[in-house]
Length: 146
Image (cartoon, rainbow, N blue to C red; front, side, top):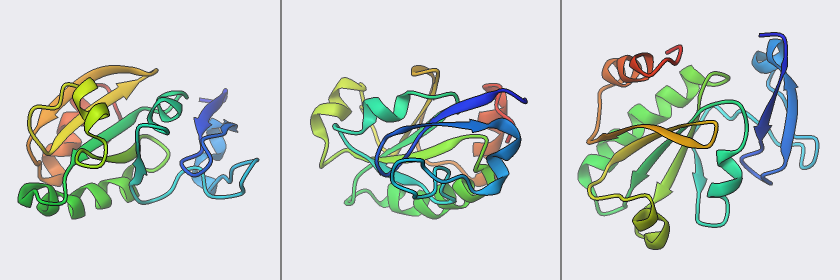
């Protein structure tokens, strides 16, 4: 992994070219200077979702709602995974209530739902909350170092 990776900034959505060997060095966006790989999940909405699908690092999307008990219970697990998997997978959250049209386009039928995208294409989907070991196993099952 010596080739540079293209990674969209979770703040301004600008594309950044980052050498793979430097992913662990807390790279900053060339445009807005924020961290490109935050150790916490970042929010996406209808306007930013398409921009976040671009890039070379996989995107794991958690579709949730504020009224959903299992979603709230899963949030700390997802946040912990974001910290542990930084530089290997980007973790984002989509509020299905605030973004009903996008949730409908994604075919969300139950929440929480996890959708894994590689190269801008959905490669896996999981409905329901997972414990951290199960989440890691699910990611490994789909070819990601977890």
